[in-house]
Length: 247
Length: 352
Image 1 (cartoon, rainbow over the protein chains, first blue to last red):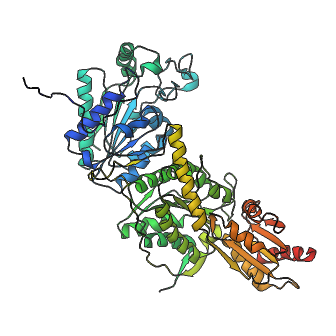
Image 2 (tube, rainbow over the protein chains, first blue to last red; image 1 turned 90 degrees about the vertical axis):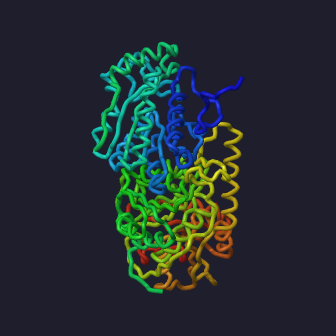
Image 3 (cartoon, rainbow over the protein chains, first blue to last red; image 1 turned 60 degrees about the vertical axis):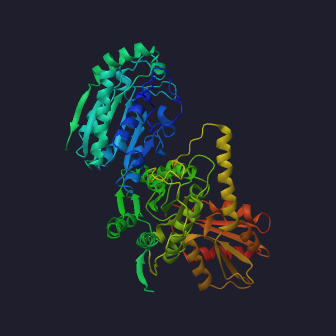
């Protein structure tokens, strides 16, 4: 009886176990990016930029040349890479503390210059790695270690919708928000990630895919409850779908 | 070679181009604006890239990306901008990345003023950012000196894979002098560590990084940095001396202040005494042994700075009890004149 291999780890992912918590969707997102790079034949011309946050070790997982950026500075680092290697496929992988808080200047101006890069923005509405503090994307009422009674709009303001902010920038070519909680949404996310990389290779300029992600540990939920909360509460505030295409 | 009459800031930029620098990222701040302005038209002429970054933080992190990609890169700023770049400089030092950073010092602290100063000495020579690291620091004494040191800095940054700082001041940046700027071919170094896309599978995957979560591995990483610094301290010290023979008063100064002191020495005569001048060119590594040697047999040492006495600390450490050390400094953007410096020397001469 012969065996047929139908599913395997993409070569673009190194044979290293993820350090992510059970129920976290970083692993799915890593895999989707790796599959897309591989399917587009970009493996040996890709340079990735890892952030500071839960995915700080992304350089250990993606099987390509990588640079580890300071907190929030990935778009500036990616700019410095892409201006040297114009034909390379350059992507950043950033969380919501990294991109939507400390790195707002860098992300906005990378888009304003229409840097020809792909940004994968993982929004899980919390600072995961540092232990569950309030993020710029934490929902009103959501509990975090620095908003123990739930985010209070009066003192902490409203969460920021980065995709909508980025869409207002002339230089941004493609912005889409997706999630990765079931087969259908994962397939949609993969399409968006691939589109972003394709647009970069076509020289269209800046693109960003925001991927809503679960953080059962930081949210204090079971993985299944986290998925339900994401689908209902997060999607309610961060609507899914295409936000901008073309400029 | 053709001599050109150039402003310090513009000469610094042209020297970088002639040393093979094709990438410059910067943010406007006085008194260094002629540097980005010059690069903005000059780099496109030679197929290079100029970006006016969103901030000094953006600029230094663009340098990180470009340097990590294997290309020569420069950024420039002045005091407050260097404070912002400190994070990125620490990361580049930690990740073993070459870069040339120009600081045309202005008076601080805070917003301070746009007038010349030497008050970023400690920031430049003792780190400035977090962690145990050093940068090569070169202090030009004039425009030609700035040209030569910029070109040297690119080679040394590449050789040692670390940031090199050109610590100038508003006088150096703004004054015009005749200069010769020659093309300087970059030294040959291995850059197989750079991220270029992993086509060549004969080399390891390139990862530019300063993170190391295992304490023993991070200590090892630090020990390697310290070993590099030790080697540099032994072989990269630069300094100049003037009028040393038979001198009994030794003045120590760097940068434009050193030039003023030369005038003070040339234009005056001090009965019964002779004044020598010791000018550190590399501020890190500091010419400790050479300075101590130079102070032997001297009756006293006078340190002159446009600061509250920042290099003074290094002079005292180097000189020890070989000779008494005195200090004269001006702050706030005031440039001490040759006359007022000589008056200080005269006072010392009277009590000797």
